[in-house]
Length: 623
Image (cartoon, rainbow, N blue to C red; front, side, top):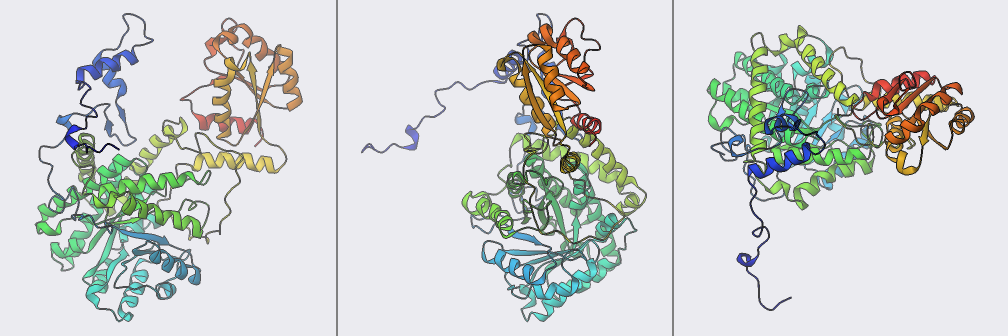
């Protein structure tokens, strides 16, 4: 190193580069988009912007470029109304949020051990699910017996026994001998959420009972608005946000009718929200929920300091895959980062093997450490609203707020419970699920390791099976990967019966001709667990012979347009004569040139409905 120190003022990184203007950006965009377009058919700037603008399944518009006009005039501050930037002010300490890992193993000894292991190795809170297929009501005290309740908050949740779970936790608090003022957590009572899962009418009378249970403990919130129920049933960001506000408003009304003030009602409620791999939408949704809830509080006359929405973010169960499960570590990391940047006060990262069964020590440790590393080593937890001021995030926050408020207003007339009972909510979820299913099937929404880059020969994870859950008649979890996993299961069953589903890829010409399309097509069929057999040859007879030897019923031509035009039709006819019941082409049928009509049964291409193709192929192959 030089003896002479270099000051910060002497360092020049980007100063030697010109600052590009918006016009410069547009010029480069047009250059790319018009590269292969014929003269006179070039896109205008307006058409280019339209081409590059996309929309989410629930109608959020994503622009290609954001400017200062998309931001906010007044950024505001964390810790004060309207709380968009956070309910607290992070001061640089490492305990920016509570790390509350989920426990739902009914084995009392195992859960008791796992709870204390989490707390000793980075966890700061406990999150229990109490249900017939999880922790029994009578075992709550046992699994919490080693917990220092004055240091670690406890949050309970239940799909079927909410009030019983709340009473069990209240009994634990009462028997602890701790100063009641030091005990914190949430009793998990959410009657509308329970009704949504059960398909029954909501009993709001339990809200007052939950408040009574929590009365001795000022740091314990009795009520939760669990928006993850709607997210896991298919809600997009707009509807999850709208439903959270709608349920919260209904609970405030019920609580004030039972004698609480609006301030006391606000203090009784906590929100449980999803954190997804769409990190910017998650950040914006958490920010928007605080802003909308503060607005509700303002209208109701709640004291400004009490209008903040406390949020417990849980990584998305809907986005977890069973296959290539280790990719879930990446999903959990992105989701956790989003919840951190969005300002969640409590976080739960689901283990990567959650779809395969009950987690192991390893999967629990990686889930827990995802939070620890982000909070303490990556320093995300030390920063107040790191996305605040971003033109994109501020625009997305505002857009989410406006769209969710419109949905909320449509539900607020008779209340959310009524909209749930009369099928309005299910109809809205069905619409969003249909839009998402279409994008999943065409791989516009991509699932790494599932619909893209699958390892169809991987060994399935072996995990302790979850107990059978009670059959409920309401909303169900709709996992994004399920449709692809079902296809893989069909292939696995056929393979287990001694008949592995196989498609022959007739690769014409040299590797440089067919390599790209062969790789694409192999990947596509592997999504459904279907084996692919590469066949090469110089004559149509070569391919016909290999088809006969393999016994394949489905064949796909793979090559370049030039080779297709020279050999494609002849090879397709030879394959069909040799017994191929379906002959497809990778690319466009017109590339076959003269004689293309009737030579093949269809084509495979990027953007096609993969689910329909794989389903039809498996049916053709007898799987």
